[in-house]
Image (cartoon, rainbow, N blue to C red; front, side, top):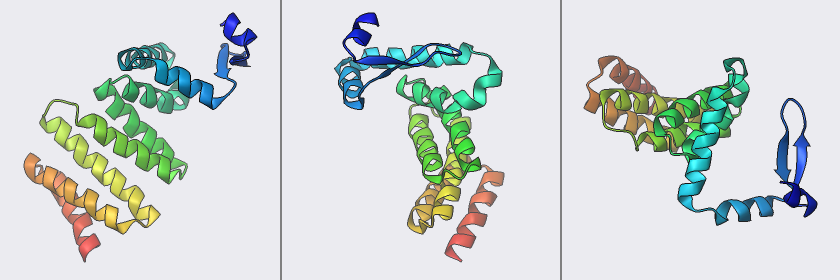
Length: 176
């Protein structure tokens, strides 16, 4: 770290409560990151996610997005789905709709890596409906229909009457 600071690649960006370093240029960060092998990057992200999880839970709301990011890139798929869903909810609560949509859609991507189970299908339905809510607020009705149709397909596969009723309610309001 001292050598990198002396070469002006890094600087101390935060001293309290813990020391933090930042690259002086985003391009340097990108070059260093991309120079790492995929397996090494994945391991680093998984390690960071573990370290964040070990921190006191009272800091969780502020760490949720970081946990989601590192769990996703650390290929900790189950945790990634959970944290991305929570990050999406937090983004929605502050009307950061594009961020929420990204979180929900990345959670759906992460869920494809999980073993098939009724819980996975239920989670995917819920994520499609959350994405639908965001897209509706953004006025992107074409994509609303895509998520509703995907949720309907999954609800039929799951045979979950409660979720199917919820999806059909949205579909009826969407298609009239």
